[in-house]
Picture 1 (cartoon, rainbow, N blue to C red):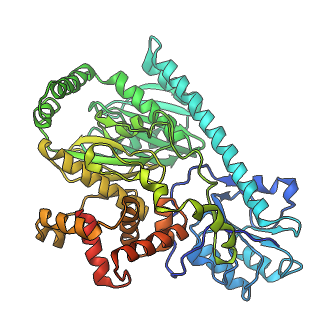
Picture 2: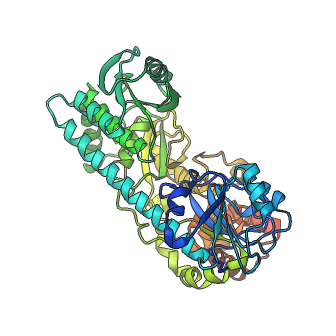
Length: 544
């Protein structure tokens, strides 16, 4: 049985992190089994589970190397206790197990079949003629097809909603288009929870009451949640607070919830917020006034007075679904019209990325080095590093700049599906540049730790040192490092020296991480295994 691997996993035995947001919809195992050329055979479990990625491992205990949701492929090289092995795979959250027969086993061990059946873990038999790479490639193709189909569906829905918004009665038309696209019911609730407008098919009374209750959870409260979801009457329910401060809520009920439905509903929220906001012209005038003041030489403090009294919160965001409305939908969800969408509104620079989810461990690492480490030099990512305080958010690892938003400090910032957020501390207009840098650093921490939302933290002990002296020392200490090496060292230290988590956070190969850290240690002439050295470098990187 051939075995392939594209990522070498960390050997530290720690619980697996939560699966990171995946760029493609999951694929049912049944779709993979339907590929006749693979000759796969289901030996236990249900074929209806969803596969998020594929991973190859011949470790006796694969638990530390799994993220959850993957199809784990193995030839059983170190399979000694099938029951314990399956138990660990299930604990790690793997979706299914693929077992390759020959050269180690002529057939799938009966004990393995029994253990998978007992644990409810789907088990597929991979015939000798089918290499694991063929299984992985087939899954990637299915995921690409699913993502293309979903993007087309979302794009068509966006066009339909935009067309509806231009009709003589735009609010009912948008609700009708939304209900049609989601195959359910769309309701616009007033501030008191009554139905202001309805479109779509009838739903059971139980579902109607549950949807109304869900809308009341949002309500007109300032700083309250922007969205909520639940189930009722056998239907999937969701509610979204509209912008404009009028307390209106959009409720949606449908039989299923596809990956793109939240984006489609977000577009409807933006359109309905614009269509129902009575003071929209006043808000536009205020923003125009602020812009004109800046262009005519006013200071940011003077210009900000046209927007409100302050203080303000700066939010940096990365993620979204790559559609043109993603950033606007995020702004509507957070309740602000002050948005710098960067390039995250559809022109993503990640088109050429390798197929996702091709995990592996040391058993097949020879397939990875030549592919990824060749572009892992320091210069390869230098274009992605820049000074956040310059006003332009730098691209990280080929990904587009962050979306930036400005909110009144009184507005609550909550995690948003599909987005990673970094939030600054409240700041007056004169300190917004510093708040922008705080939000950028918080976003980097959120991406490195795979946390949906990270807020700026107080300086702590670092605040006891004069900032100018700290910055001067940092410049001297870190002078030998290029921007790429400094960024890699910062991420590596923030993740406690984990090669794999640093590689995932920076979207590079772990061998590239090792090369960069070794190069940094040589240039600095420091022992990076010394905790005192690590602490000094961490403070320097934060102060520089």
